[in-house]
Image (cartoon, rainbow, N blue to C red):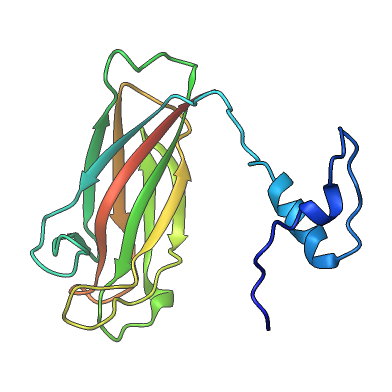
Length: 187
């Protein structure tokens, strides 16, 4: 193939004063199209949001990437709070979601035997089996955490999360919680 050494527009555009000419050569048509491409942009108004994050560090193993996680054994309950800064809290003008990064222990108990009740500000948002798997690799920092997401039904300035491990499992079986976050946005 011979390298191209001339100006590709000399032969087709010449001294054209404002009229666009159609290129007979497909290569030239592609070149012209590329030169005419403009970026496709948007400039939507920003959305005000606030995320309150809790790294859970009760037990020194399993969590990812910190290496720590909170553990709820069968029949036990945990409580966490998220305080919305006063400048951001406007009753009735916020939506919120709670995200919980969770996994089951690395034991051999059937996943169908694990369950929990999760409430936010006294209102139950989940009751029953959790869509979680046993942690892998066993005995190490797990790599298969799942994020559970729940809408917050009644936002308070201080939001109380209560999780009860209601599993029909062995007393030493547990549900691991790596982190939680509440995301607030305007309505």
